[in-house]
Amino acid sequence: MELNGNAAADSKRSFKLMIVDDSNIMRRRIERSQQMDDLEVVGAACNGLEAIELFQKTDPDIVTMDLTMPQMDGIECIERLVELKPSIRILVISALSDKATAVDAMEKGANGFLNKPFTDRQLNEAIAELIRER
Image 1 (cartoon, rainbow, N blue to C red):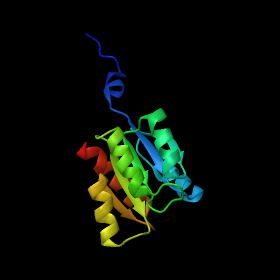
Image 2 (cartoon, rainbow, N blue to C red):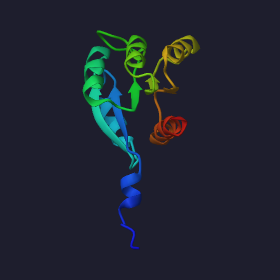
Image 3 (cartoon, helix red, strand yellow):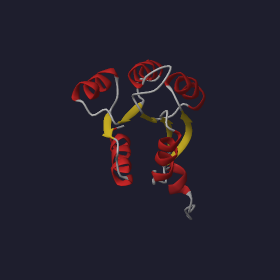
């Protein structure tokens, strides 16, 4: 019996990533630094309201989330996304490094926290950790 050479690739799980940050530079940086073959960027939003709309269209598995944004901040957006899809994995990426903010984000449903500035390696390790924990 001959095995199809693509069988392993076909059975490999692919994850969808949505990026949420009010900085266009940061959104592009996160997208460019993502180095995993099994992770596809399905969208990028510049605020919480846009993120919820995009989330409903793209159904991502993982979200990177800034906290300080116009119209709807990251904390409220995390809460809303978790209500829509309890299994969502959220990595907060923020310059706000105070412990209370990180704890608040985690209590609302975030699964990890990465401080800005960060290296590509730190970002990829944090996303890989969320995938492993699924």
